[in-house]
Image 1 (cartoon, rainbow, N blue to C red):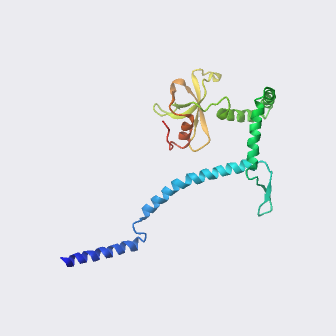
Image 2 (cartoon, one colour):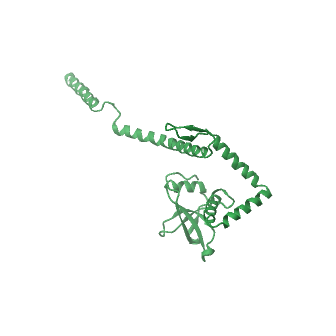
Image 3 (cartoon, rainbow, N blue to C red):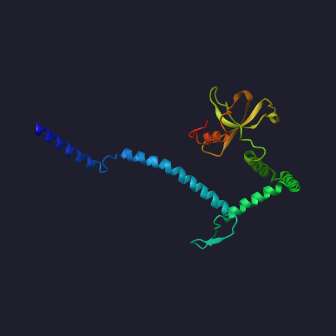
Length: 223
């Protein structure tokens, strides 16, 4: 009996040695290692990409004003403001916003605005850019009413934002204009649809709705 137990122990010992030879990492199998790699990638990648994008945006804006310049390895001059440029731009925007709140300054700005909107060639670009920024931050904010819009099938819905309460300019008074953004892109499609094909989502904020669409439905929507 003892001889059989000894043989079993020897067999188990050599079996373990064989496993260690084929798998030097012991209990860590390649699939497990790959799983740990993906888990680490999911943690690190969003942080690194976010940090890089912030760094790229800050340095790009910061270097718009060539305050200081340095030489690269080829002898070319490149701007290096070390944050001073972006501080000057932010301060200038704050100052312009403060001055524009004055009655007389506002009249001058309105006159200049009217001049640009009537200038051939500049009118289209200026008005489009102005409307775009006002849709996000101005008094004419548009992307603050998330809705579900039915434009494909009877039970297929897209997430969009109401930009016009009616489309009477196009002879469609009982229709609404809805902008539907694309996932993983800065583009979108504008639809003019009947009001009965639009469903409000009052429990979802515009920010959560936009993140949900842009991420392809990956992000969670807060209740």
